[in-house]
Image (cartoon, rainbow, N blue to C red):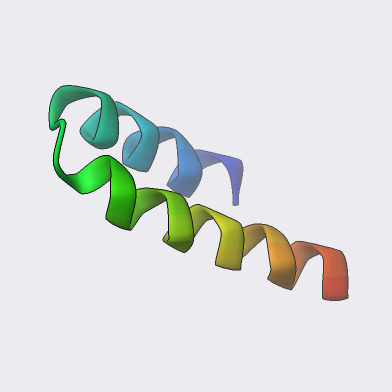
Length: 36
């Protein structure tokens, strides 16, 4: 899970627009982890 989140963070940092879309995606991933 961490490996998948790392690349997303790098992409979000490089692109200023995607950050907004990346944040919700990351939150959803965290929600799944919390549920598990």
